[in-house]
Amino acid sequence: MLRRLYDWVLHWAETPYGTWALFFLALAESSFFPIPPDVLLIALAISIPAKSFRYALVCTVGSLIGGVIGYLIGYQFMELVGLQILEFYGLMAKFNAVGDLYNKYNALAVGIAGFTPIPYKVFTISAGAFGINFPIFLAASAVSRAARFFIVGWLIYKFGPGIRAFIDRYFNILAVVFVILLVGGFILIRYIF
Image (cartoon, rainbow, N blue to C red; front, side, top):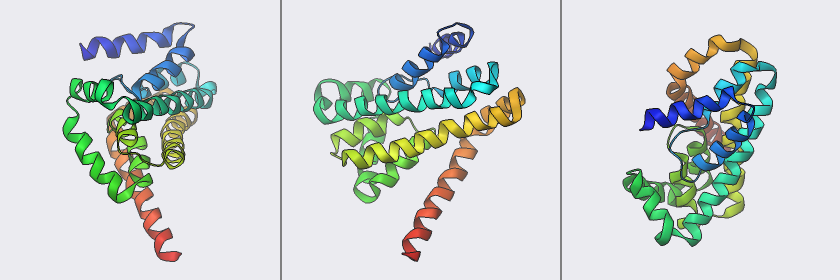
């Protein structure tokens, strides 16, 4: 079933509605859908590399709106909807772990989650459920999601279709390296100031 969903997402790159599909996919993935928008972002950017940054922006905006919806689900509708979404994807154990991360690291947890391959919906719903400060949640989401999508867009713009295999193959490693650099930057700032 997941493979059929993946193929269905990719087919939108071949239609005139690809940009809208990217927007709605990014929105849905941040709150309830299983396929990350990177799949369609890469396909669209490869089809028209000159529009890579536009696609990254569409993806970022959709993801942020979806993140707000996820936050709202956790904040207002956790019992009614949030728990069912997390249980459906088998993410309840991660939900509890995310609560611990929020208690310790707050914005940094959101920032890391927004960039890494960890299902972002767990963090958006959890942020609402655990009452994370909304402006902090939104700012950390904006920075991390934009970084993730604009890096992909820039790589395709700079290196063309050949970079797709590299991104697909090493995305998790690249995400971990970025997170290490991000955390290292926060630690450095903390000790300097």
